[in-house]
Image (tube, rainbow, N blue to C red; front, side, top):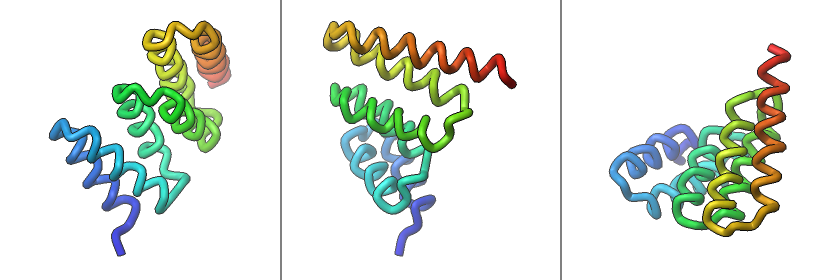
Length: 112
């Protein structure tokens, strides 16, 4: 049986080759095998955002923050995910959530 780490490597190879749809499917396999695989959630957030699947992108970015609640980068990435959703939809809710995530990142950064 293929491990989550092996699936992740396969997904990264697909992503680097520009095969985003295939990479999304492979990263989804990673999180299905191991829902705590933060880097796979982060990669899915980016790729799903590029594919215009903003609700899914946000869900994966939020999951990364749940898994590593003290990681500044995850909240910064979540803010960017919300910003991209706002740019695509003009739904102001997303920009407010982007600001909240950015604030959380700053708070965490100043604690360290």
